[in-house]
Image (cartoon, rainbow, N blue to C red; front, side, top):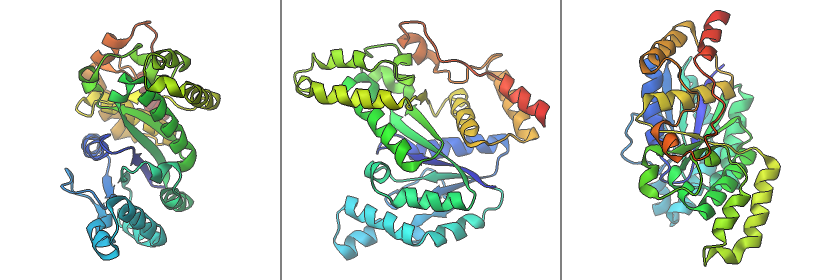
Length: 309
């Protein structure tokens, strides 16, 4: 039963960098990994893709032949992949016992209302691929209340459209201090607490105050579903990557092998005696105003898995 991560998110959120960093981390655990580049616009990849959609269709070729712009050509490419999903299935079958990282394009409409990506994933699920969507969002959006509300709504829409186990990630958390001051502690944003507090800040914005009623309804919609929360990621921090991986493996039902569990335990012992499951490091300490933190799941999870094996 193949397992994998479907890495999605808007342009600039760090999807390709995530795939590179996550692959390196997984390989260090002893996991066999295959990276699948499904973005025909991806150039100068930091990793060597095991499967590359450019072998099937190329964005520049589509733009030249059909006289389409970048967005229209990308839509065409994904629809072409949908119609030729058998090519992808055949390529995946060549990598026996691999854990897959799917690097998808950054166009948001592909995950909010267009059906090509969801159709491709549905096909893979029918073939018993156990997939988890990892939705990356740049953490700097937390510094702007209006943008953060939009990000939460986009995350909710993506969750409903893809219909997969889902982990939302605030990426580049190590750079958040350079982007501006947060209105609340970081836990407010990771746990998506009472968003009505952000409406008060939007009232002070000369532009956004005109859309107060709309923002209020959007906030009500998000809170009525109560589905969106975030974890944080610094891709250069091994502990942060480990925390995201645990959430993904829990969501997808992946069970550590004996050797892999031992490697994780050794790394955790080297990092700290008690690893917070969703630790945000120095950024959390500096931005937590209320002292409220996310409920931690520690290395006891790994120990239990080892006992069960």
